[in-house]
Image (cartoon, rainbow, N blue to C red):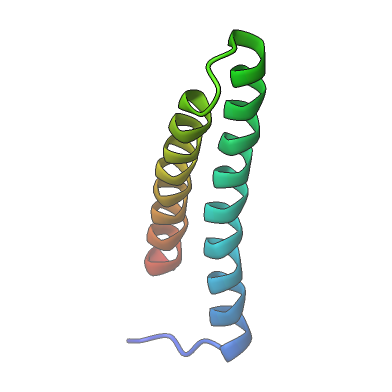
Length: 71
């Protein structure tokens, strides 16, 4: 039987997925910027950090979505 969920539960899921992607991307950007200043490789590590942050965010969002679907 399909379980009925409240619209607030769906809104919380969307907010959680968005925050996971945004926070990991911003974290990757800050880490890349810090490493750029440390190693003096101006935009390279920033770009790599953003892409790693995006990837980590989408992986985390996938795990969250999988847990939501299992419920």
